[in-house]
Length: 135
Image (cartoon, rainbow, N blue to C red):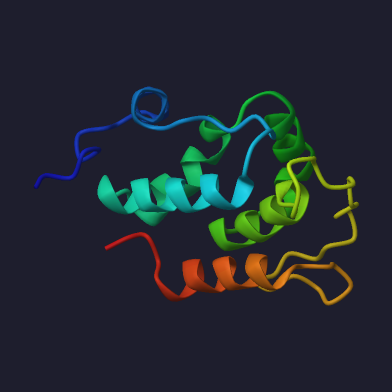
């Protein structure tokens, strides 16, 4: 199978690809499921790591996009994005979690110990790190 983005020369083509093949996240709904679905789609379409990182803003809309823009300087990898995203939007109920400030987070692959991360969130992030979505 040819790489679906092998002929893409501009970021607009990536945006169009994401618009047609992926479901965008607004901050409402199961964040864990959405993140896993997205990473599985990355694998299915054989998106390279750089393309995955570039796709992040195109995958988010509404409040989730605003959250991303507020924290863009902290997000230096897809793994860190995943951890911060799950911390912000994952909860055990259908209601959104309390807005926990991540302003003090220093850029690193692992979240600092003062951030409360559920076991499920940690496991999902660890699986993403162990099994990168690029070939």
